[in-house]
Image (cartoon, rainbow, N blue to C red):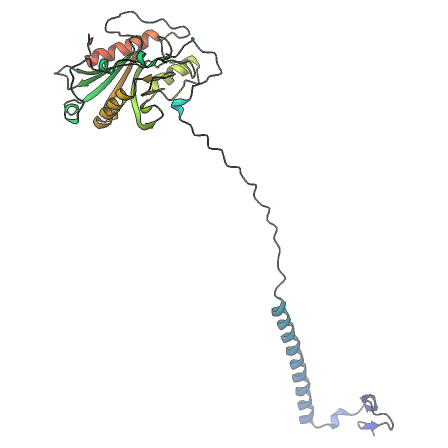
Length: 310
């Protein structure tokens, strides 16, 4: 009969159960057919959920496939060597030929150094804070030919300046004329300020001048000179290349006085010789502005009212 299950004797496998698909399904009650379909759908849903759950567990166990990113290592930049040196102890060099030959003062015999008593050619007044408080400004006048550094105090326009000290140079280099380039061994000539004080100098104490200042740079540009030099100091000891040494005892006193008074209120004038007693000017090869420079120096000395200490 169509729609019935037939059993084949001797065959116990699942293939023995045959269902005639040509059976008239309409003979099965509608409720059973619906229940059957629901069961089939539920079975499929359970099967799908099981498969999905298995895949999720597998992905959590092994984790996502790692993404390997190769980052090129940055090249190591070598550290610069420590090239800091005390420029006061370095002889300046210049590839260009020097304007003039110079020979630093060589003091081998201690007896050749100036007598400390020669420092005080003015009334023996200690440079105390009380004395310095009497002045509105200080001037240092460096005379290259005379090898001396004068310290003047200025009280005001109505009272003339007072010569406080005369410090002899304990070393010297160069010749009359301004400093023109690095390595020429020249002590600058002009009107300068003090940039800073160095209590830990290689030459006991030191005071740095602002060479090259605006004037020096302008003249260098005019002459097409680039390497003008640097690090010009007033310092202790008795050796120099372009600086002004006055010995340890003298720089100790002067350094303390300038520090107490205030270095920003100190003017430094350097001249080839004492222009208060000599009217001629040096003639300098290679420049055409020396007359302008020395007129400027003479004017500054006259304006400050510093007469001949002799």
